[in-house]
Image (cartoon, rainbow, N blue to C red; front, side, top):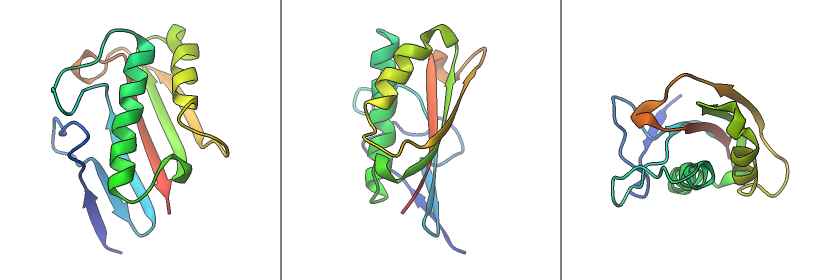
Length: 126
């Protein structure tokens, strides 16, 4: 099966040897996104809701580039440095979905790239 690399100009450039996403058949594997603004290159770190919103917007840009949206997401993984932020992260994350929520786990980690407080990756299917 052929794999197609998906890149969006509306999401921040990868900071290492990985792609925004890889499409294999009808399944899209989207790399974890942090709250970096694609236009300014600056990290959004004003508060956890703003950070989560920017992460979701970055994911949305990549999904769109692949001809998908959040309704196609079947699995999400959320990494955060403070599970005390779970309610705020969950509120903002949930606002991007309307129904048929994807499977998900949330994991507290000690550190994330670029000193982010939240990182989210998704798997989507057409």
